[in-house]
Length: 226
Image (cartoon, rainbow, N blue to C red):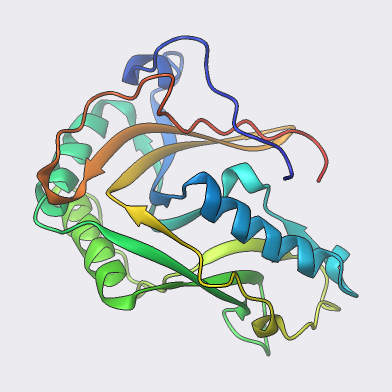
């Protein structure tokens, strides 16, 4: 396991998660993985790292693995509550499902790869969730996403062209995890790597969405190395 979760010592609140000195945050909606699925995905990355050319990839740290649903870029902190409310209105009509982890592949193609990713499914509920998030984002006043949704879990970004392993041969043995919500993360780039903090949740099936507590939040604080 390349690093682990570090939780804040105080109870999480939206105001505590947001930097009061900043008017904007870089944000995205994603599916957060449970520990077992995250470990399985990281294990696939470790197998590839050990292969010839594996050092040509900048591998994502285990504690930051997720499935992006919608990248937002820099958003106004004052719009976050409204944005989350609009997305909740859409996700409340969906049913929870299980995210299935599959095999690895080069993304977007073998001929011009930019990343090594893990396939995820099932396709229909993932597409429905991404579409619901998109409707909520647009209802909140954001511009529509022009690119079609392509479900995947990024394991690493290719730094050099010599990474040519047939990654489809590496699988996660059918590991899965429950998907009960879409999470709005704040993204910060620090010297030790990306730091993701959850600031809102949009439950599936209309379940209540309390503020996160120290025991259930997913604040990622990558360690150097790995």
